[in-house]
Each structure stands twice: as C-alpha cells, then as structure tokens.
Length: 351
Image (cartoon, rainbow, N blue to C red; front, side):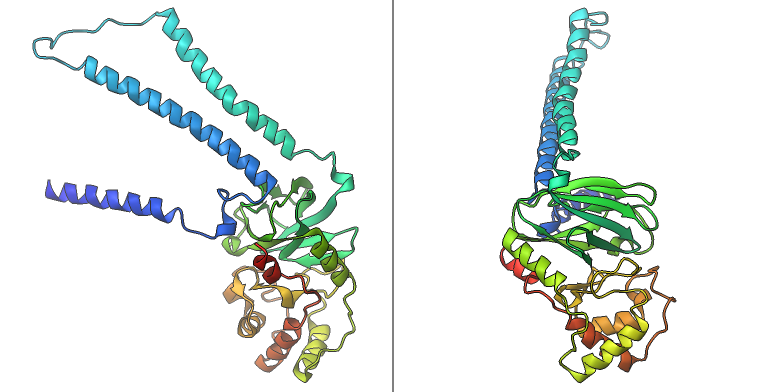
C-alpha cells in the first residue's frame, strides 16, 4: 500500500508540474496573447469551444452526482432496480437535440472564421509576399518592391499582407502563433493566407510540420513596424549599394572571399537564382540561422561547421570550408551588412 501511495503522489506532483510548465515560453510565441487579426479570431473560437466543453462537463457531473446519490444502494434494498427510462421519447429528443445545438454553436463561428481568413478579395490591392519554405529556413520575396530577404519578414502594422506560400523541398508549415494560424507550404501547389498585425513588435514563427532533423530549429520572425517605418525599410533595401566598400580592411578581405566563394548560393540584393538565404540585411538580424545569437563567434562557427548548429542542412558538404582566418574575415563582412535603421531591435522597443 505504501509503495502504491508513493506512486500516486509522484504522479500528482508530476501532473501539477506539467500544468505549470505548460505556461512557460516566449511572450511573442503564444496563441493566447494575440497580436494579429487571425490570432484573435482563432482565440475566440478556442474560447467558444472551451465554454461548450466546460458546460457539457458541468452538466454531466451534476447528473452523475445526482444519480450516484439518489440511486445508491441502500440497506435492505440490495435487489432494488430503479425505474428504467428506455423508450422515453422526451428524453431521447432532449439528448439528441442538445448535442446538435452545441455543435451548431461551435460550427457556425468556426465556418464563418474559416471563410473570413481565406478571403482574397483584397489581394490585388494589398502587399503580397512570396514565402518559400526550405530545409531549414524561410525565404521572403517582395515581388512588386523587388526585395528579397530571409528569416526576418518586415510588414506594416494594421494592413493586410497576403502570403503566397510554397516549399522548395518537403512539406513545411508556416506558423506565427501570436499573429495568425498555420498554413502548409507544399512543393506542388501554392497556398495563400493573409496576416494582419495589430501592434508593432517582433513575433516569433515556427515550422509546424515535421520536415527533418532540424525541424525544431526552423525559426523565423515577423517584424511589424509602422507604415512609415516600413516604407523607409523598403527604400533602404531597394537602395543597397552592392559595390560599397566595407570600412575595415578585414571586412574588405572578407567581401572578396565572399564574392569568390559564397555568391554561388547566397545573394546580396535581389537575386532570383540564389539557392541559399538572402544576406542583404544580415547584420540587422538578431539571430543566426533563426536560433543562435548573432555574434561574431557564432557566425565563424557556422561557416566552419554548419552541421553542428543545424543537422541536415543543405549547406553542409556543398562548399569548400575556408580556414578559420578566412571565416573570421567573412564574418566581419557579413556583420556590417546593415542597410536600414529599421531593425528587429527598433521594432522590439516599440512593442
């Protein structure tokens, strides 16, 4: 008995710990703190469903308790059988109609929200961004603005932004919990959704479809800024001087090494042929490969051994690994790529 009680006690505290820890996480990576129209609509549906389930649970427990108390076995009535309700048409109707009504309460707003979030009537007059999922990073192409970037998507607050999504390899799923719901990216067909941020800030996104060994590391960010700051960012990205000479000698040497060895896959500026992440505003980012802090040391380590940071990435084994000295010079060059004053850090300060 003592051993059995110990197991029950351990299970109880483990359950409590699980409930407490389930509330831990990043503030801007939560569907319960909506900062976008789609996320708010989804949360409303969650609360409607939760209210219905709580109502059903309470009613069932009341009936269960009533039956348990009223019809419990009493002394001297061991063979007593309560009156049976089989064939009672009134009860049959009640417990058939009530579930139907509860389903309608959930289904009507859910269907309405589904059609609302799939609405493309404003697409032609809104900002459109082509999103490509890759193992294990995201690429963003602003077609009309002729801007390409990776990992950090900049959008204006309070405006619909349509995302036209595909995958370059396997199935991925685009999800920014605090902004909107999920949408799969497929290799064969394009899926479209729109997002609308309600507040300025930096919102974390995840891949929600198992896509390989570094699936959990396929993070990205949406940087929501004011319409004025967004226009400034667009102009800064469009006016990047591709022939600008870095200030330091080390960065200048790193630029030469980069142009001779890295431009085959990456791009500075807009390039439709690049197969690796666009690095135009690499120095403005706060994360390397979506997950590590953007420091000189981490950039060097990534260049020398990307497999250690993101297992299964497509860069591993497909380039000539430079010496550590060359990697440090390339890092010096990449970290000075800061074309705009509008960055995730300035957006975070406005949040």
